[in-house]
Image (cartoon, rainbow, N blue to C red; front, side, top):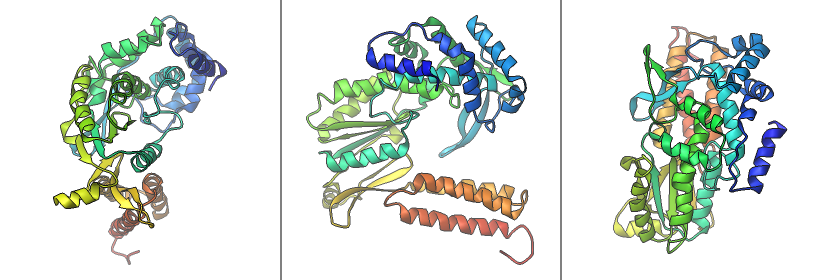
Length: 409
């Protein structure tokens, strides 16, 4: 990170209410563009022009100078993005992604770096998604500690329907203008959002939303929800609740915990109207309010109901006890994610088992299970991780042994 960009963060921290009017030169700076080029992964998918990092870097200095000149005179126009889909639970088509051409990725990275310096000091502690030095494990740990140590008895889990597709440009512009007064930077962001999406040879114009897959979209989504949700909860919900109230948000998934049932119900009613005012909608099938806390299990047994639990960030959270009998929030891999990951691995090894030597295939399989365990191997989840490893091993041997009629491995 360049020294000039760090100075932006220091200035914002000292002047929390001042509008920044001179930012665009950081985006166009050729040293910043070069640094963005180096930070990009050359193995990522390429855009509609078919140019990757290696080809772009053959004449790097000339390309960066030309890009910087076009940005300075506002002659830079982002190209159309390529539509692709990745597997998504509950969807036959998959999750839509928009893949930018490599040059656009450089500009998106440059804009992202500037925006992060402005907004990172402003974002609240309840926000964990797509932020520096923050990850899902920290969010999960904070939820557990809050429920265990604070006086909370009710959980409201919510999800915003198609958030990235419904993000309103007019409201986003108003939010950005709270801190950014450089019209050239705002105009560049608008151009990025308006870049068309190419799918099956046809280009579709965009009228709202932020393209998933674009480098700049996560920070824009955090800015949007910072004003639409986080500040509202901090200034309007928390102070007027009878008891404790806490918000935890990771991108567009969020969770709220309350002490009193009345506070949780009031928040649910207010949330719908609040989000509708910004063009958003709560997904009712992914939204629930449950009693969850120290006495939730006993209360559920008395009512003849199942043990309360909720799923957040790929983990099922449930009420348990420590070895000494104290209340504890425990977690295990969500069965939906468990089955999905095994299904994805099965499809992969069926397809690739004859394309690589056994040693290469096993090394790639190892990297897949290692990636799974890096995320899911947390306290209290040992049984599910061991089960996943056993299933993973059986699937591997099954499909490797189907390559020929020789003696099996």
